[in-house]
Structures are given as C-alpha cells and as structure tokens.
Length: 240
Image (cartoon, rainbow, N blue to C red; front, top):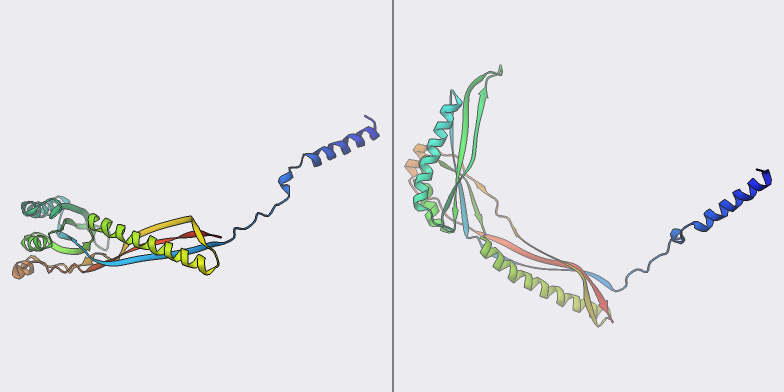
C-alpha cells in the first residue's frame, strides 16, 4: 500500500467514526415541573389498650443438665396445667416461651454445674382473669407485663384516622393552591402511614415462691393508653 493511499483511508475512517457518534452525546436539559407542592397532614388519637400479655418464668440450677432440664419441665408443666383450665380463645390464651440451658464455669474454665430458665406467656382481653391466674401459678413468677392494642381495635382506629388525615391533606392542598393563585390541584404521589407509639414491655422484679405465696393477690391491672397516628404525605400538581 502506498503512503498516500494509507493517509486517505485513515482520514476516511476518522470521518466515519465522527458521523457514527450518537446524537444523544449532547446533554439536553429537561424542563423542571412547575406548580408542584409537597404537603403533609396527620391525625392521631389516644386509645385504651385492650390486650394484656404477661410473661412468667422460672429458673433452676443443679450439678447436671438432666436435673436442671427436668426441674424446668416440671415447673412449666404444672403452670400449663393450671393455665389451661382458665383458657378461652381471644380472652385468655397460654403458650410456652423461651427455654434455655447452659453450663456454669469456674475461673479455670471447668464446668461446675448447670442452670437454665423457661418462660410461659398468658395473654388476652380478659385482663381480670389473667391477673387472677398469675396469682395462682406458684411454679413461675412474673417477669414482664405488656399492654397492647388488639388488631380489631387497631384497624378500626387506623381506618378512622386515615380518613381524617386524607381529608385534612385534601383541604390543605386546596387552600395552598388557592393562596398560590391556582384554581385547583391533582395528586401526583401520596403515601399513607399508620402506627402506634409506645407500648413496650414492663419488666417485673423476680419474686421467690415464698413471697408469691404470702402475697396471694392478683396482678394489678392498669392498661393505660397508646397513641395511634395516621400520616399522609406526598406531592400535588397545582392547576390553573
């Protein structure tokens, strides 16, 4: 190939590459949306909690794992037998919980014995029956007390609050659009969130069998209230 011919082909190849470059290589600025408003509205209410959950536990220790496990099982089985007598679906329900077993060591890393714990949970809407039952369970002691809102009550309240929050959102959107000189609006994007604040478990001091027998009284019941909130936020397009 002659040198002149080589230069001609190289120039032609360069021109071809330039012509093949995508047209989109040039950045085109898109117009920004106009008249878009970001809004938020909420509604909340205090609701008395209607479900009581009591977690009861027992602890055992001994020279070997089998002895400790048998002691825990015996205590839980006795509590279950008593609790099942009072069980009613939705009103008073009982279930077993955490069961743990682990060795104890001395400062030389040698096993000196075993200890373990087991839990039983009683929960439901009949708070007085649950409170009275906990006073009769002599093989376990109260570890935690938890008040919550039932699903039925929560869904009812959330539906009412959501309707209120949406109405406030729409009213605020219409008012803000009017103040900005627009005649109306359309919804662009919206999010609805609901939830309950608070309601964590209340820990109880562990009590011995002798103290439980001496007290012989039902668990004090005071459910208190929780705050349920519904929030609506998003953007609207104000229209002329």
